[in-house]
Length: 493
Image: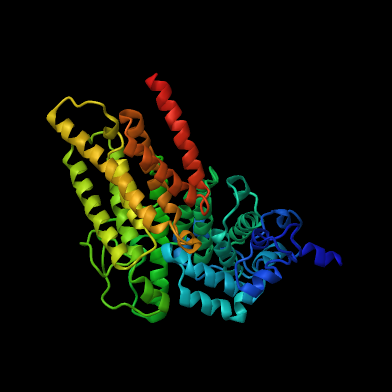
């Protein structure tokens, strides 16, 4: 066997061959068995990225430094951003393969992750990927590599940081970012890296990646005022894609605040008149939706799609975050009641829509319930009330926490049971919802010694254990529950 051939082979069998206990030829990026079955091939190792890069990364043009150092000069200058055009490193080529392998990665991505995070234009991506000139745009290869990464399911949490695809993606992302260019595809890749890190509990990297995405988005001009609809068909697709990417950044930043409400956010808060994403199916097909101008504060509508509902849930979550941060606002404030009513209304609507459309995706419902739990987090742990108003708020908080927990059980039983296909469609954005359910049932068991609560806690554990098969952060939440129970037990003693 030649030196080149040995370097192209993985040191161990792929996940699929290990599972079937069959022989694997260890060819990268996909073994013969996976190629024959047209399934995604995963190798859990990081040896492919430790060696030197054989293909030099050569920048074709200089970045206009005035963009960061003198915006006024840049705005009147004819200089534009250079295209990213250099050879793809060998360690990346080993991961994504040739055009047929890239097409397979993209197809599987659009059938899974894209359903709950639709921020890449499906029609445009396949058009660009099929173009021979696309091989000169390294950000497209980076995006394809990040699509592969976000679909990877490591066997354990510890392995999540050591697999070759993760190291290759982080390394290539850094190389592209210092290549003196700014592109939307690079930001999309960075978002998928952040999603992978969130889903598998890779901290503090996930927190830093989310902040980096926000900084990058601001640098390339994304924002609420920069994503208005365009008349031209191609411009409309590009404008909608930019809007969706910006919403994704806003969503991730607010999601990161669920466990850390005082976390600083860089992206501007969504406003009442912020445009929601248009119809997902029409955008995927490249069909322009006429007269679509639904905003964050518009009444719920049957024509709203999954990503629009997720955006609207994020709009309410942002209000909750600002509400709990405000030291002048008390639990008895009327705004608390109004936010609770708005969240309950949207949660009920999203649950009805999921049932009506037979949806397997519940991340917008999860965000609603997570926001409800955050809104009532502090007053929900009070033991007694000093006034009637406090008593009402305490009872409302207890009722809301119970609803959050019970709804998680109902959703998990409906969506997480069955074949692995359902599990592959699960979003990591539902994990915090599961943790809030675990915390509520654990508190009920400790305070009331209720048999029903004990059964419910066991069911919630099983749901999170099943989620851990896809997203390893679920296991971290289970470990945090154990630590939380020990801490509260020590305090009570």
